[in-house]
Length: 542
Image (spheres, rainbow, N blue to C red):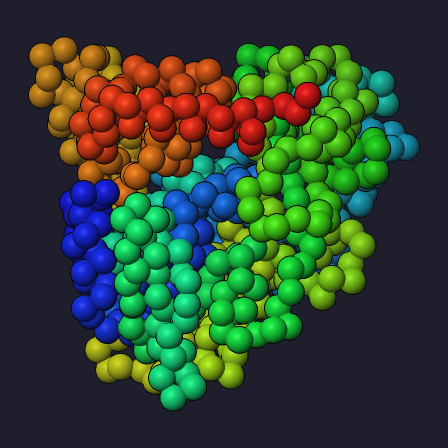
């Protein structure tokens, strides 16, 4: 399957392919775990398909803290194995996929007789560096009181003794998932969204595929495969029940809420990490995409595994914590540009009272029918989780001689760092006025940005072409089906508030309608639906 057929118009052909061929592997779930399994399998030469009930990265993988991090707090909880693995995966991606994974300094302010002591922080940071193989992007450093205040003027000065600066990384989680998925498609994998699994197929008591329902046509299709992986995260138990697991009952879900502030409203020049004055939980205010992302709340919630709505208690907890710690910043409800909540797919027996203490490690199970389910895991370690999943799959169905070993540790996503830099430099020389926009395009799309830049510069007025060219690219190569897909998970920015998102859709209405084959009435209907979606899921609760 080629990326030029990975679009809404090609869905009939994709479903024919899914129905007519027998695959080595069918992956259910289009979040980062499923996408990583899909890409790994495709790079090995396996015949692989992936189906997603809604849009790719529309659940947990598009509502995360947007960090690729080693997990400093895991050390405190003695989760050294997960911290070691997370640190090494973070360093690998910074080196291999630097356009997507951006190293970022994190500042921990240190106070006299409050929070972690300087001595304890020194031991903790040395352990963190050791777990990283002393191969972090930059070695940590301790700052004086003056240096700390120069980076974070809004910090309370009373009792401040200095700070510790260390490095983790930030990422656009939905773009990361999309780029991983696209790389699988570019390597002959077959993927489709809005295709819910309604039944698992079996032969001689063993799972042999799935029946899927196309949300747009209403048609059902049977997809046959030698192995099936259930990588549906918070929806894992729904697929298990289709496999006949009656013990798979709805579990408590861990919910996290995040607030987005405009960069100019936050009197900081770097990311800070601090403990909530309310309960001691670790919080962060991270500089990211021309804004500051603040999070995260973390608590159990009795709910169906659907899109969570930000609750008043979540927002009040975050704002109260921030204003008690850093009152001079004056960051209140009026400064919040955007809000979102997400459920975490944690592996737990349900006995833990504090969801923050539950391990983020993955857990892989194989049912009596051969259904492979992966539970837990995190954005940072999804690549290595996928490698473990495929090890189990190969053990289950046997290895084909034509399949290679895992390559994801050595193959960049969307082009090597050198090739991306050279291609970007070419277009910057051609059109210097668009340098900053071209950089964004290459960060998002890798070498595929070459086609977008070419389309932009071919117009009579290059400064008027960017929106059209980018929208055309994502609609033709990234399976955009709705306005929400386009603006929330393909071509939008985290710092855009609801009004800005709707404005950009109206501005690009003509090209969007043409690319998605929408009539004027259909476009307005989707725009209204998206507006209601923003009010329900991304607005502050009254």
